[in-house]
Length: 341
Image (cartoon, rainbow, N blue to C red; front, side, top):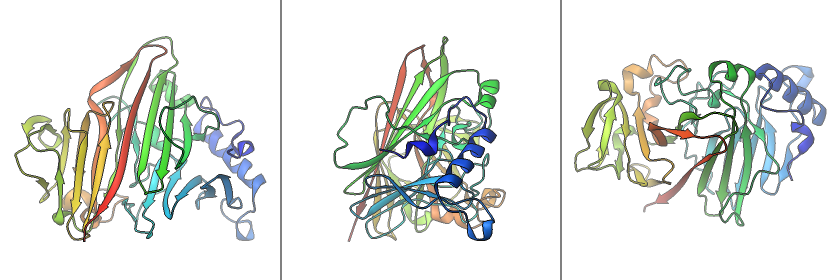
């Protein structure tokens, strides 16, 4: 069972300031403070369930570390965001910017941000929506989720609207996220979004996954051949991908529509391949790399770090999902790694 007392009183109807204050007080009471009483309090490391450990980052925001057969994944409650995914040899698979800011309401640059209820600048909300900027809570007794989790270590997180969210997006929802790590190192993310309002609402969503690569010029993506895509660098003009694998020589910002459900990201220099599997709830794939010029304008990204990252997202962005009252949407993403000799 999760350590329930730490999260008592954390409900989605509070504002972010209230949530952070409660987290500060609860973790202060459950662990020791930092040296000399300076800085945010840090609770003693806690095993909140088998294979899951609760720790605090330098700003006092809880993280959950999942471990299974030597592999690990780290999840920040800021954004419900996976910020690390490592093999049993401690090889990091996700990119995290050296300039990443772990301080709400700033989103964390890297890992797997969850873009909801808007992707990009396609609506009236802040870029990529507000879910990635909010503190999520641990849910101890979530509704049943179909699937075999007997050999997986997992956590369940929950996001409800904050007071400030209701002012800019007046819809009542429950966003449940299960993050699981299998014994073979496979990482799964399952999102369930339920309409608990009295009226319909629509949303877009993306798992904005930053893969760590050796050199972007040595990477190719397979599985998008002959697919239609919208080019965000050309006012969302529609094109068809050519027959070969996708390679990178300049900035890329594309949305592949109704794409294949299995995509491979091949890193020749590191001799490894990321395999992305997604279900029908995530029909689209977003591919993004800012390249040199744009990287220099992104304050939380190093000027040369574009070379070590590639975003390939499982997403539902071209045709927003509409839920009637009581309806629920599910989207599953699976990430695995293949090593080559």
